[in-house]
Image (tube, rainbow, N blue to C red; front, side, top):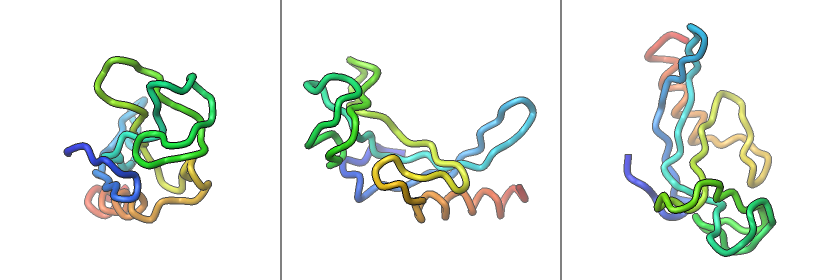
Length: 102
């Protein structure tokens, strides 16, 4: 999975998260976003990575060549950018549910 550069062009890779002998279908986004190297952490900013604006800077890990974070979506989860579910993420999750029977 390569990194994308714009949030609007994001793709999702179906993944299975295992925790306490349970499996959860999920989807991992390929675009790091909502980060800034100049805005204080947690402060709302314009022009964040991935083309995102007016959300909190979430560049928690510095000096790793990724500005922002990657989203890991589970079934029914909402985006932090607009409080909506992401149809592309839900479609990727459904691929796992079909293949794995979860």
